[in-house]
Length: 461
Image (cartoon, rainbow, N blue to C red; front, side, top):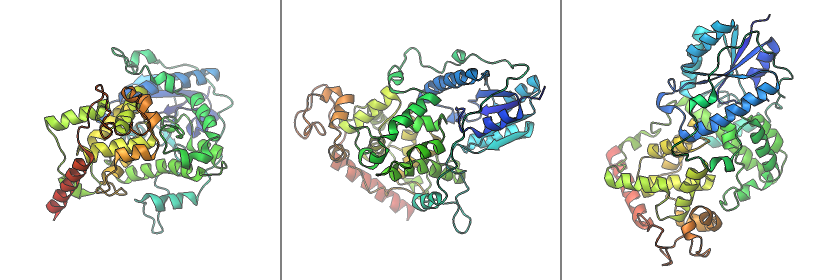
């Protein structure tokens, strides 16, 4: 019998438009493998919310494989060691995978290639990161020219269908039981609201795409309105590779209206990978070295403020609504993410890396590239970023983007307030006793932030 081929799944948990699976299926019997490797990423092992999603996505992938007469093999440990062991057990000749660009996955690919015949394919992004270059052959650091150059090579190739057949090997290797990995929270189960909000897996991803197609043309107008929730909600599906960006592009590209703004957000994923390809430690180090001297707050008062931010108890309704939505569903509206991140950095003067780590643990779409790029953009520390002195006013943002219904949903203590007062109960002298006062006033916070920025600049000089 033809030697089986291993397909090494990671953040590409789908059967359709999956080049590694297609190549392996064309060659003969397939052994589909997912390895829970917490050793290689070290402190970048998946956070709790991502593990909840992973459990359900792996269950979905296994079910899809079984419909084809196959199955998903689960192992825990270092990827290179586990893949080598499986290959020895089953006489596998090759390992196929989709390329990943996080620094730990690139290290893992190098380690696997030293032991086995590893064949890497592309397919997690519109174009392979590193392939969009400037006129002199360099890599872009700024999003706008990157996106302009990327668009010139669009559309991506049409997405491929799932393999018609996936041949089973003569002998299956041993597999862990998914339940034994304890990916789901217990005692307490803090993810009770996740199931109502999400359907992980390829079928759920495609259902989300189908739901969004009818609204894609209005994305530019609705995406900033938290109460309308005009987001696509595709970010966790794209992060876990349950649907390819090519599929999303082709389903939406002809929607008209402001769909180009949505397509630009798909391009932002590519841009973020382009950044971490150049700066692998982007999630831990300021791109602008001057900020290494920034006087971030620490100590008991800062710790108390951080806890208030995490729990949605800052006294700023739009910030608190976002942080509570995050805890309840593992996701936060995109406009509110910017407001909440800016508040932590500029109102509370807490290091952006603290917020990045909180999002890493609590977001179901916690993506290293996108998370790091977004936080550094907000902090003003990135290679392409907002200027630090541009301090977002959360109270004004809440009213401007008509977030009253959103606040009522996630901050029920304020549900009885009218649309005019709900954005700033303190200002209108109607704050309920159950809701906290602002932990710092906006003007005071702005002055403190600008003083800290001036101190950093003085240090740099």
